[in-house]
Amino acid sequence: MKILGLAGSPRKNGNTEILLDIALDEARKNGAICSKIRLMDKTIFHCRACSRCARTGKCVIKDDMQGIYKKILESDGVIWATPVHAWNVSSLTKIAMDRTYALTFPRLQMAGKVGGLIVVAARRGWMNVANLYHMFCIDNHMFTTEFVWGQAREKGDIKKDIFAMNMAEEMARQMISLISSGLKFPEEFDVPMYRIVARRLKRVLPDR
Image (cartoon, rainbow, N blue to C red; front, side, top):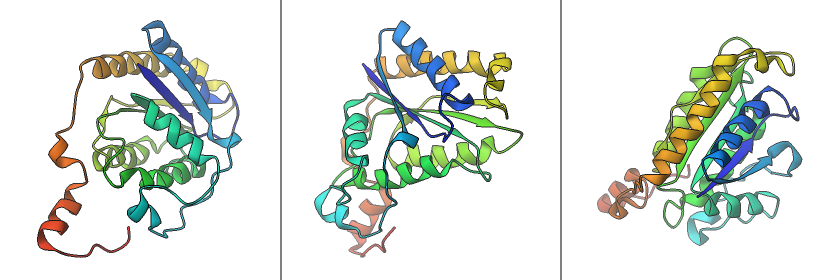
């Protein structure tokens, strides 16, 4: 099985990435092939809301997101790791998440994959991020592990959070178990439910 970690912090080898590395290391110990992408090292432009992907199933923007699409689709599990910025995911993470909209056409291409979430906050904001992430998984018909939260501010402080580090290991084991279980979303629901209903009612949906 293959697991991809997406590091959404602008701080290289910072608290968020430390927890992500712990999770990926644990997954490797349990037999997974793991890879990591630092979003800060990639050129990713914002979604243009052009809706061309709805007609072609592909994003027209030629940037590093094209390679990330390939890695996501090759993976059985995807771990999103982000610090809390302004009560939400980092801007790096949000742009990448927005751009996965192209993977919802002509069907939900991430359906059945297992998602994982790692969040680090200086004080508060974990639940805001978790709510966004869980809606992302629901919309894409992905299965999800429980999420990992840690508290840290200065670089490296997360190593004092023994609870968070152990949670990262446990989440990796959950992901391995879920992938191994062979969970599968029903093929009759290969697009979001709102599209199925709109098709039935013959309504044109507004751009997302």
